[in-house]
Image (tube, rainbow, N blue to C red; front, side, top):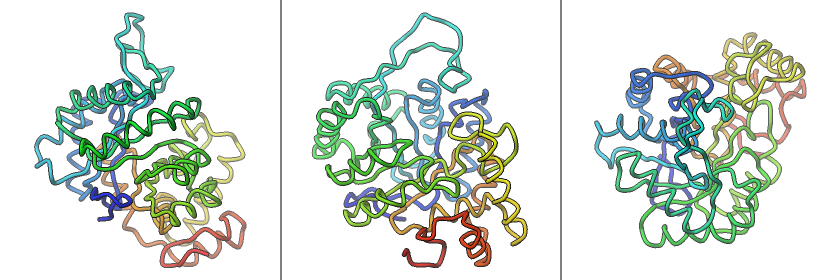
Amino acid sequence: MSRLGRSGVEVGPLGLGAAGIGSLYTAVSDEQANEAIDAAWAAGMRYFDTAPHYGIGLSERRLGAALRAHPRGAYTISTKVGRRLEPSGAGGDDLANGFAVPATHRRVWDFSADGVRRCLEESLTRLGLDRVDAVYLHDPDDHAEQAFHEGYPALEKLRSEGVVGAIGAGMNQAEMLTRFVRDTDVDMVLCAGRYTLLDQRALSDLLPAARERGTSVVVGGAFNSGLLADPRPGATYNYTQAPPELVERALRLKGLADRHGTTLRAAALAFCAAHPAVVSVLVGARSAAEVRDCAEQFTAPVADGFWQELRATGLLHPDAPVPAEEPC
């Protein structure tokens, strides 16, 4: 277990990102979601991350219900603020936002102090909990000034009041997360998809800044939303169809992994976990089978020769640390 920054909140090296059980892309039943969470627990995962955005509250409701079977002090849970959910009579589904659920609510961007508190209170209701361990500002890309000047101070106050143990920001970019690390006192950042075998943008500024400041990094999107789990034409990359050149690159990575007697999934997870600034890797599994596979792949050895050939062929940044190696 590792602490999130200087907080007392601890997370394990592998956690469950709960977007999938919120019916990301395609529908997931209550039974399937519950089985996935149970499988994560059986595999030793004790860190669970969710958000109101995931299935417009469905992920939080399912996660909270499943975790009630376990002592509250036995696991760590994080959620996110910045998107309030308001009832909507528009009808239809939420597939435009990526989730196969009825569009019962609409998302309202709100990083104000009041919005942050309201969002957290509503999340606690959906989760059926009186507290969460950690809270992230969620995707403030187009709301930077409000997030820094209103949302972050609100989280800092909640932390000082003991309402939450750790605070941070979660995004699909590295640049603004670097600003959070350098200009605020966040405990952690959640970097999704920007430190993977296909995209190492976080390596240049974010990860060094996090090490310097003692800020923990949680990595999400280790498979870049699907392409590194199953590289093929039509696979998903960053929540949309992968372009042909990235499919070709992922297939090259898979071929290299095959030659060295490992899997691309194992290599992708091992790579994310190898950087010393990273304290946890979240996997977005949506079924018990996917959860068990991720847990097995996370502990599977990856041959040194794989990493050596990866560098020799220019498929990996020369400064990126790999397992059992100190960072350059």
